[in-house]
Length: 306
Image (tube, rainbow, N blue to C red):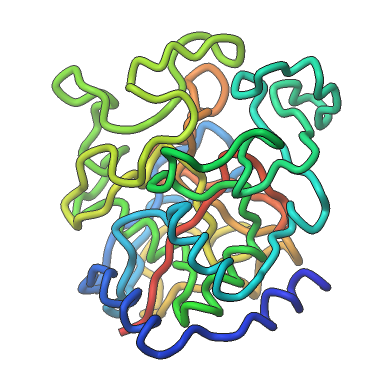
């Protein structure tokens, strides 16, 4: 709870700063949309079955929060992320100069390495920085860190429903923000893992690790990179979703009352998603993580009520 208290203690930005950030968000008109998919490859994710959800109009960022965005927040507030406070975070082994120097891994996940002093401003640990990555999504961000940014900016984390509605871009019953083909017209439309996971990333999509927040074309609502690149935190606690059918008009479809006590929802997949291991780069895909957990593929975007 100490991390939650620190996040909630962050002072708000001046009104003009908040208004400036809010002005960068895009409006979503709301109404009913179809959320979820007919089936899920990962039952433990408890993906939503197809169902109708009603949302009131809202605003959401067309981009994930970038390194430059987060640096502005950190400079203004002095906030230290959970990774900075605890002194380490997890980094994908292929991004390290010498993975053998970082032998500690989480159980069953040898491609993640515990790296001392890895954090948002040093994504691969000491000796790394953000030079040339100012417009890449900020990573090593846990849910509490995202909440702290929202408290400063006077914005919100999107709910799952808000996030998925924006990701679909007005399309229904489609896998991706642009349609059903992973590589439309033979071209890459998102940043995922090519090659043989987890030993070789060929980078055929142009990127190994993160890509800029505007690297690929936007969807029908002007949203960029809502699948692939980095997992994005949602406001909701993780838990089972209601069954199919039309739900009562709810806004913003917040299911926190029935969720797990602590785990939070992440959406969209990341640059590590691959069909052989983590086929979660779809608009309906979700997973869970603890609110104090940070990794090198964890970021967020912001939303706001109208």
